[in-house]
Structure formats: structure tokens, C-alpha cells
Image (cartoon, rainbow, N blue to C red; front, side, top):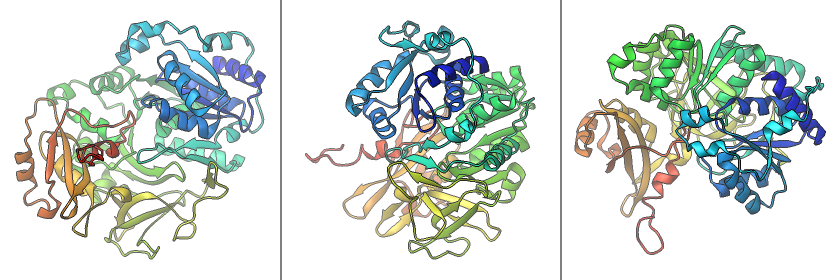
Length: 500
């Protein structure tokens, strides 16, 4: 794979790809994704991964914003990218990657997608045309880390332009990440999340550079996850809370059939983990379960292990490696322990500065030197951070702030609940009301009345959802991030007065 990546790097260099040039990547989880990522980095260009769940207008936004020279795309997405280029007015070359039958079978896709469209140059041909790998390019890896996009969960993705890392910073980032993530040359790494998402991408690429072995899941399936852990003696995997909940939805007898003792690092992030899920996961996976909190702009901020979490249930940990967390009021005034406010962060000592693409400077807020990325929470007396949700998701009911994460945690503690989304919907009297969409575990029977009864005595009545819908699924992307704006849109009145 490294040889193929080197040959692809030679092909990219021949097209003039170098520092500052961008190459978009719209590929499913497969080896080609990592080959392209390494090849782009080898010439010092910026890889721009694109969410495989996006449609043409969403893809067009990133293409118009980043202006890539080339787009490497699986056959499945060629039509979407062609339309996106028309919308964005882009001139990037589209390079098509053929989809192997085993990928299509594992991902549950149409076998006909194994036949390329024939409208564009194939990635395999591009590699074949350059038999010799590109030699080392001084500073290329540092240059390649200069641009990364936010996930765009609550709005359009923003391009984060990082200051160029020094050699010392690059080694510090790699060393700290490898140590905390459990990456060694002898590690067996399972890629369970989408490679277009920052965290699985960083883990996989760093694991390759270290020399670890990697197993790639084209899509997450809880039973297949356990099969891989047992068969391949997986030592490291990166997941999100939704994946943990789906693993726990497997019958106890099924879970007991699999040996997970090889896992030394089962790391989760990306969203607050409901305490009920976390406790059950710790009981199963033990000290292998670790959690971090961070953001695209500032990297990983806090870490917490399993035993530490049991002493501070609900926390996402304390700042590490010189990073910092402050909880403040709207005017920037620091708040005392236990009081909820906006979360402000600063990256680790080795983390580079940044600005957003199209803006000359980093955003300035009321707390000098610290950044808010829209989260709310509080600190305890020992400096442990607890998240209560996103500031944009706070429900204001009759002038009272209600934090969806608190309600979600209470709902997730109800037996038979696999997933939940709590959000605000318009209310003519109180401004907003609380709605909850709930996914039951397989075989479980849930009713709105039973949920309301279970919350009695757990939450103040004004926090109880007034609208409860039992549903088969929630609009989460492959990275586990919940797109609540899609749920809220169902309740927003249209111009004619009907629901949106």
C-alpha cells in the first residue's frame, strides 16, 4: 500500500500538486482512501475528505470553498460529484476509483457499481502510469496538515487552516496521539468509523506510519465488530457512543460468545456518552474504554479513563498536555464549579494556531486566548468537564433553559432504549417545548406513556418531553453525529401553516 501511495504521489507531483494544492476525497471505507491520503500528504498537498452521505449541493459547498485541483471518487458518487461541480463552477479533474466486489458486498451496495462509468480517468491507471514511487519531499507531511474541515453537524462545514507545524510540533502531536490512542508497531487497529471523519482518519493514517496492522470495516455492524475483535485480536478501535449502544443492544448471550480481551484501547468521542451506556460498556470492556473531548480547531482537549470516570460519572475528563478549559457566562466571566455556561478551550502546548478559510484571523471571543465551539457544560471542583449539549440546542421554555443532554441521559437509562434525540420545537404559549425521538433496542417495546412514567421522579416535570415519538432510527451520519436540525424541521410551520 505504501508503494502504491508513493506511485500515486509521483502522479500527483506530475500534475503540479504541491503545498497549498487541495485534493478532495469522496470514497467509502477502503484501502484506496488511505492510499490517496498518504499520496496527497507525500507531496505536501491538502487532502479534503468529503462525507459520503452528502448530496450534490452539500458537496458543492466544500468544492466551492476549497477549490480542489483533483477529486478522487468512488464510482457510486461520480454522478453526485459531477452535479456538484456544475453547481460550484469547479474545474477540478475527477478521478474515478473502481469499487471492488467485496466492498460492495460488505457495505450492502448494488454489485453493478463494480463497473466504472467510463467517463473519467481511473485511479488504477493513474498509479500504473508511474512505476516509481515519489522520493521524500522535505516538510511535505507538515504542509499536508494545513487544512481540515469541521463536520458541519449544525451548519455548513468550515475550513480550518492551521499554522504550519514545526518538526518539534509534528513529533509532539504524533507522539502524544500514538501514546494516548494505543498505537504501536505491533498494534492491531480496527477502523470502525468513516474515514472521512477526522478522528478515524487520523488514527488510521498514524497507525500506518507507525507500522501497525489495520482492518477496515466498510460500515459499522455490531456483530461484525465483535467478530473482527476476536478473529484479528484487535488491540485498538475508535468508536462513538452510538456504536457502544448498538453493541450493547446485542443479546447478552451473543456478547458472551466473543472474546474481547485483546482490546487495550477502545476509545470513544464525538458526542456525549449517556452514563447508562458508559457504565455498561465499562462493565464489559473494563479499563480499555477511554474517552476524549476535542474539536477540529484545537485538537484533543480532555481525556478520561474508565476507573477515573467511575469516580467522576458523566465527565469527559480534565485537560491534558497543557490544554485548557474554562466555563464562562455570555460576557466571558468565569463561572464557579457546578454552574452551566459556555465551554471555552485552548489546544495542547504543541497544537498550532488556526484561522478559518476565507478569514485572515482566528475568531475572537469574550475570553482572550480561548475558543468557543458552541458547547455548554460545567466544571466540578477538581476541574473535570461535564457537557450539557450545544449552545444552539438549548431549549428555552417559558424563559427557562433546558439542556437536552440531561434529558437524553435520563431517557437512555430506561431499559429498552437504544438511541434518543431531544430537541426544542415551536410552542405558541411557552416559546419552545421539548420533543424526544426514541429508538428502541431490538425486541423491546416502548410507548410514550411508559417513557413519561419512567422519567417521573428522575427529572423535573418542566423538563419532560411533551412530544415523544418512537421511531426506527435517527438521522446520524456514519460518524455518529446527530443532525437534529433535520428533526426540528418536521415541526417548523411552513408558510402555509402546515408542518415543515
